[in-house]
Length: 546
Figure 1 (cartoon, rainbow, N blue to C red):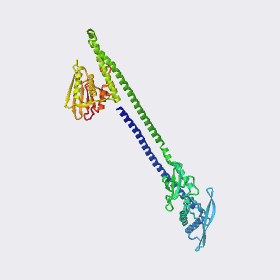
Figure 2 (figure 1 turned 45 degrees about the vertical axis):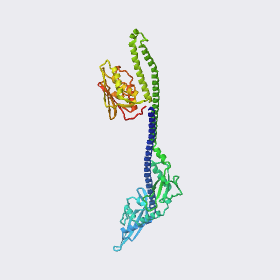
Figure 3 (figure 1 turned 60 degrees about the vertical axis):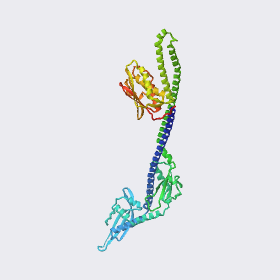
Figure 4 (figure 1 turned 135 degrees about the horizontal axis):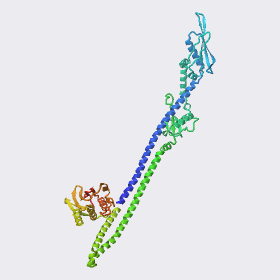
């Protein structure tokens, strides 16, 4: 039985370790998936920022080409036209360059002069306006809103606010023409001219430093048909062949609906290593937990083996010891019989030694019973109980044991009674073990009774099988001791009073026999009022008769 239990414990231990590995592996896979999803999320955010910054930077460079263009001629023509519209009677308009000190700084200005002649009055007049000289469109957009007044002694100065000039100039047709020409030129640009690989690499490097992503990367550029774009000048990180299925992908010009789409493919060669580094803390904790649990399980298993070995050594020692005790017990028994023989001892000596011989005989018998109990306990511990299954009448066994018990109650006013309900009390079991079981229960009831024992044995057949109740009105058992009474060598504490003899093996033996046969034993007790032991014999279970 114990070997079977040890095998079951080994199997359960192995299953526990394997289950632990499977669970921890599953959790690590789930953690890897979560980290991988987080990685893709960070990568998509980073790609969006790269595309946004790259497109805005390219738009800025394109518009700066327009803004930095010299359009002083167009600007002067626009000034003349607007000045003429303000003063429709002007006959001639001229523009001259001049330099004026403004806030301690020399700046270029234009003097716009117009001549007018009134034919009715015959008066000729001259009008002048002072405006900033704008060479590039950038100067116009960055111009100050302030103005400088200039008066001529013979004319009325007309001052044009710089903001008005900006508004006038923005409406000029050539600005629209320049914008259209810029887009028209861009449509015919090659991908190599639209993308600066080195500049794009700097944007990628800058954005990766801001995100929780690996700093080692490679990238390639493809068109909307998947064809790789080659560059004459490119950084080391730009590759002409990458596995696009393992790359993050983004359109570098998402707002440009006119031109061909160009895609950035960003690849991280150490992606898995980076994710595993992110999992490092959790991985170490998991490994430590698994190692600790395995060590604990191995330690527990080794402890079980050591305890089993010690138990076997103890059982072997007890078995050998009890067998050795049987020889002197038998010798003492024979000596007592010889001392009681009239042929061996004369009548006078017989009368003087008879009480001592009787005492020795009784104590020897008790010692023999104790040795047998210890031997049976050792056999049970080793799982080597030998069963000789025969068909038994439980009623007859009880009646025989009750007759023997009545002799022990002689000299007291105690009583032991029986009650049987039913007719069939047959049971297949080992006669010796069943007899010992019943004898222990009766012996226990007698030992723990008061001065006047009152014991009743009640046997009946019901739907569960045969049910035996041993009822006494003895000293009872406290509730805190009930769960332990079937433990080996356990005795209910009685303080300094030791009037009840025994080693605490009887009920342990009873419990072991019940477990061997699948019988059920229960106990109910009220301290100071008595105890009831109930054994339910399972008659439905079939045992092979010897």
